[in-house]
Length: 322
Ligand code: ASP
Image (cartoon, rainbow, N blue to C red; front, side):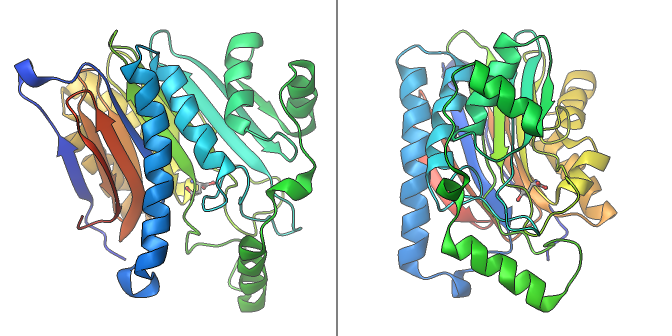
């Protein structure tokens, strides 16, 4: 696995700054061209484009970055290609347990939930935790009691289960490799956006890692690790081996570097993903700065991703060299 972070950044001259922009990801991992047919690549790209278009439409219509992030993530949660919502990975016990977080860069209000098994769209629960509760982070049954009280849609847990993810759990158990899958089953989803008022937001949603046990929580719902937004600096959504992203405080660290060292989104993200690599972790981040700049940085061979902005950019990619 590559240890050098790969990065792409869209930076524009002052007079060309986009009025709004959005970037999304659908997970990072060891995807390679020889293990993926052209047809499957096209399927993923179409799925990413649909989510990107939904988020971009909110922004083009003058909507907020929070609504754009939410719109893109709901589509990815509903799509079984990704490890979030329907199509999430299984725990060791064969359950789909979801984590999600959302953050508003205007005032750093945030909401997150972990270990839910019935909430159809965990990103909606995270948003409701942010807006309708005095708390930031709710877990497991308590989070579901709250979801019910807020009339957030609950579904039978079977709704989330797919044969492909079940097979991945069986393979993991057969290999007896360890506590959970270190070869990421890519598919965590996230979005970062800047709206035409210059407000930024970030969101992330995941089933976590295949074979997770003991109520394991990854970085995705942890504010400052997998998700962060601060109008003074940036919005970040991460994907990768969560334990390392928690230890490096990835999302907050990138924002702190941008705010205090004046680094660009790409430079800050490169430095922090390099630290994750030094610790032994792999994955990637998407970053949006208030000026509309977006960056993708990963130390894996690929990350499902896309970006769009008001200048007409609208693109999706899978491999690190794209
Ligand atoms: N970061 C997620 C977790 O550790 C997994 C992923 O991004 O694939 O739960």
